[in-house]
Length: 414
Image (cartoon, rainbow, N blue to C red):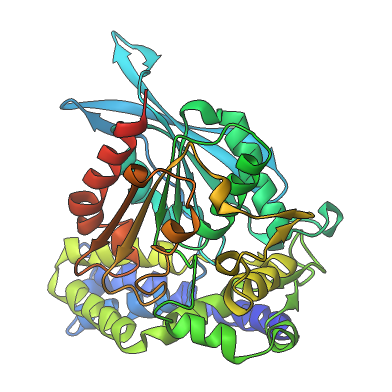
């Protein structure tokens, strides 16, 4: 019922939102007589703020059409390589432009970036992908909004997530592949590679795990506390809802994106309020660059997706309540997850000093589990002054994190 009420409110607010957008353009334009009225600039700025708070945020585009390489801009083409009901495997192919003839750039190691399925779209990793494209062939998991998936496609569980990762690794080819997992997928990625190693399959050359809950008992955060202070039945009864009839996934049980977004905002309400007020002042004062930075950030941050209920509940129980991975008690489809079975894959972990989602030590715990990896093939880095998003996006990512990650991958590449 809550989901239906949300949809009703969204539809009811739509005319006001469109009105605010129109007023922002009319009163903010210098070429209209309305824009010259006293107080027009304040009214336009307030209307744009109202519009951005009330509007729907659809899934953004990656929008990566070119990269700079050796001082030259090279075209980039986004291609879908594998299509699964709950995820697409995308490849960003780089080309050289030789007299108008596009030729694919070759000779650099392939990297699979495993994006989180935790509320945001994979486009939140746009900066990660764009930066890595300078030195790598980049693939990324693009998870599908569960409200857009018909019920006829069946359930999607944490075990299915792991199976998807294994399929993508095999598709790309593990013999020279490097896997980078950001936040939530560090756990299923470690499970996927562990199971492959236990079966005697080829595993990736390296794994880079960034800000993820390998062992959430270490330095528990507000996110961890919420997951452990309520029984699983509470999550099932209060956070799981059916998709309304106006979506292809009508009737599917999901953890709605709007609830996850509310949780995101509630973690730092003052910071978000200050950001919106600063946006108002930037628009009012004509600080176009700062205002555009705000728009770009919140276009991604406010665009959320629904998660399949089974997957969400599996994650809560397996990762945050029972801690099955660090305790060595996790079985996936009848097979025990044993990170110690991994021997031919180097491991790097990255944490942010100020991460308020995955606390310090949670990702680093992977090293204690992967005892089969030679000591020389372990590396950990804590990024001073970085929060959760800073380790994969923004200035610290590009200036501090990426050079270390790039050099680590290069060490184990052909």
